[in-house]
Image (cartoon, rainbow, N blue to C red):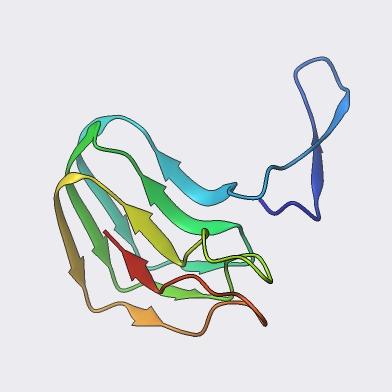
Length: 104
């Protein structure tokens, strides 16, 4: 999910992703585990809102996210109530990206 890519909406019409589109976006839920994935090439790699509780982000490779020339998109951008990061590997953001690896 990156602004350079498109998708078809429910009516089959082509749409563009917004700059902050995420590979993984969680808005609500409890006891969520995200384990053993590669997250790459999105505006935000992982985006989690305060509506999510008790989240585990474990053993993932997270790199190459963000938008060139912007400080507003990150490899992870999370605000969950109770989040644990464990055994993840963070690589650099995309070329020219000014965001952070982990913003919480």
